[in-house]
Image 1 (tube, rainbow, N blue to C red):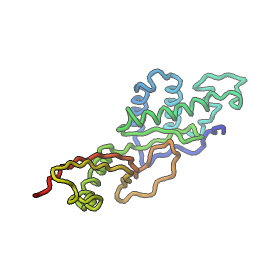
Image 2 (cartoon, rainbow, N blue to C red):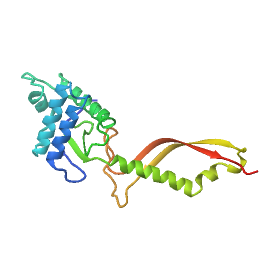
Image 3 (cartoon, rainbow, N blue to C red):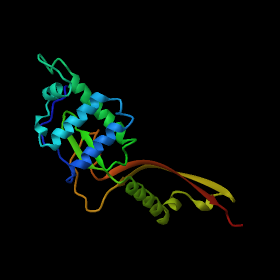
Image 4 (cartoon, rainbow, N blue to C red):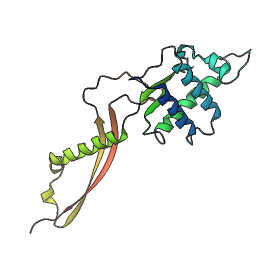
Length: 208
């Protein structure tokens, strides 16, 4: 399926300082994933600057092809897929970046499938997510969740247990409003489901 340039304005969940967005772009381009990708860098910087200038609606395939990739007439996007191919590659690279080097960045930049308009969001606090996960585990122990799962009294004397917690935790924020549905390659707005696996060792000594 061919990708089409989106015509909607770029949006963010809250107002973000344009300089913070430009600093984020610089961080992205200095990362190992982008430092040798000059063409992707030009694509990213051009579309971000156009969006910040209020000209997001002009980010069409033909314009990007001529302005970023220096295509000259006769240039026909229907037969020259350079912009579509680079857009897919940029989305993939940004996803990889935010799953590794940029996981704690204060701003997230992404492109919805089928659009060449960048979207900006503030980053979630990874420390906050980790703390919420730890609190969930503590509450599990305090509320007797482990005791209900196994019979500690059935453990032989001087035995050691290793309990593995594996599943999904949904971290949500108090008072949050429902988020705008986003594509699979976009970053969650507020709530987040976390896949986890935690191993807990317990030493149990049975009384004589």
